[in-house]
Image 1 (tube, one colour):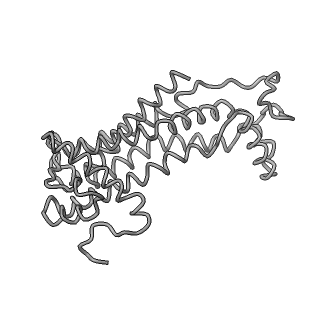
Image 2 (spheres, rainbow, N blue to C red):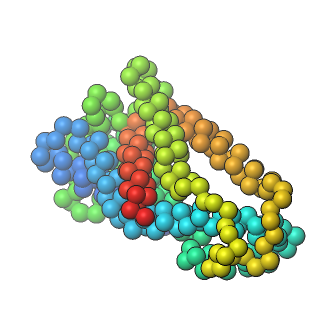
Image 3 (tube, rainbow, N blue to C red):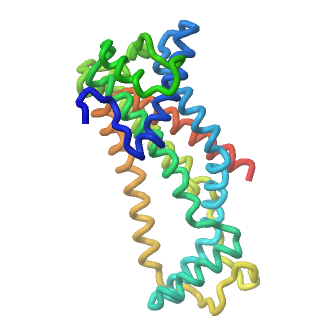
Length: 280
């Protein structure tokens, strides 16, 4: 492969990465045309807004589905206890319960699958600026993979409110850059604590025997604490603290532009979770 090539034209890049780069270039050209200060940063924010609008129906469906799962969790726990020695029967009964509740258990993975190519595309784009800066050579290589001449970039200023989006806090070496990973970690913690189905869904009381719609046949009173439930609870608690720390570390080592994308996405996730929770 030619070392001067910015992105190779394989199937993945052609479907996901290059279109994302073209979208970013579109916003950048538009904002540069109106001489908007910090056009590159606002281009990243505009990309987030576009993704959020496209994914809004998917996110709403995902949130409602996860809330329903939280509501039927007592029944799922009893199924686990009843059929723990028969995995096949357990799976069948779980799917029956999901079907009766109108739940698609795979819906939660959809947003992550759709978001990741955009994130990879943005990372690849910022990686170009991180290594080549705003040199004429880098801009020329980027322009080679744009779809139409109107998207060609003439000038790139990666500064946004005093921060260079193309460098990492680790390499910047200035104290105010260190606020970026701190803010990123705090936003991730807030999202984990306040914008999860468990946080938004009230505690569900133990199901009564009269609950026939989702009742599990042959249920017996739970006498022992579900060890798997305890393990899951412990894992959730650890992830609530470990994941924000891990994301904060990534924000320290990766370009600030990625943190900007991630943080704006997190803010909209929190707002959307809260809004859907109140309306449901």
